Image 1 (cartoon, rainbow, N blue to C red):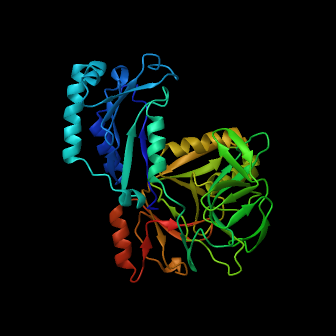
Image 2 (image 1 turned 135 degrees about the horizontal axis):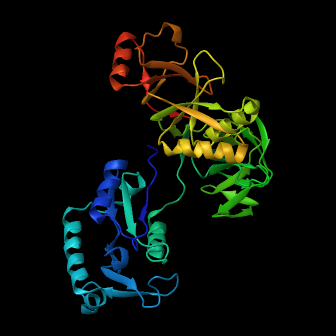
Image 3 (image 1 turned 120 degrees about the vertical axis):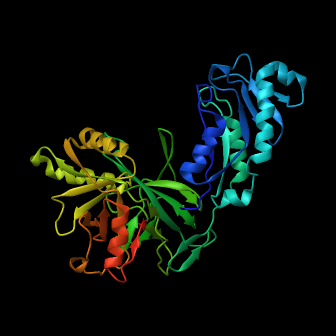
Length: 400
């Protein structure tokens, strides 16, 4: 949906795996994106011998000191070298030649332009545990990436070469350090130069803010940064004022970046806290988790937060919500699954919901910003509601 490049690394080839072609089919069918393998595994599980690089026509295998360990060097052979067959075994070699022929004849051709548009995903195979295939992936990744691009705003495109600073918030994470109950807003710099402690205008908040405690992260390590430029990602301490999609800038002519698409939930549940005395912690916790984008929360149309409806894309997110509320906020909850499977945003936010004619399995709700939405148990109910309300426009995805 966001048309960003997607690079695929299929890991754990040193473990038993599905058929390689079946893995590619699953990516294409589930994600709706074409795939182009850059390297190809030779065997899998205990029989994993290495990978074949389609660009160089080279076979890279484990050295004797590397297999099953995190150290050692790769050995490299030309596909046409008899030593390659001797190294990986005659059966593996025959299977590889057959699969290469099938790939070259029926597989998608590599096209950098399609990769850039997010329509073709380069695929790599390897084993991170043994550090095999990872360097190949990183080398190709650097070749296939490009300079930061312009981003659309309500005042046109903002390029990385503008003199003023601008950035947008794409992720929020609470309680990254449980000892400090911190909350970090991650932002991507679109233009200009960032300097620690600088004052910028928070467009959605309508006021100036100081960007304090700027951090960059690698795995569990953090480091403070003094400067950053277009294309960089930094984390800023968030006192609770930022939301996903917010714009920050020093431009004299203020603008807002285009919103980030929000996926439509497919599973819904009514959520209540068990201990009514912990209402404050419950509301705080569920709001913070929702602001991170992990879940979406809604209210009955004519009520407040007495009744909270949670929407998720996958049911495991309900388990994550339950665990985080208990472990981070000390709140135990009960969830009642709801029969709805479809959600639609109403394009005209000024629509009188009381006059809307729906179906028996439709529910009127609103999000935290007060936007009107409809829940449906069946897809045919959506069409029936549209037929009964002339001029009604429903949208499947929203933009924060």
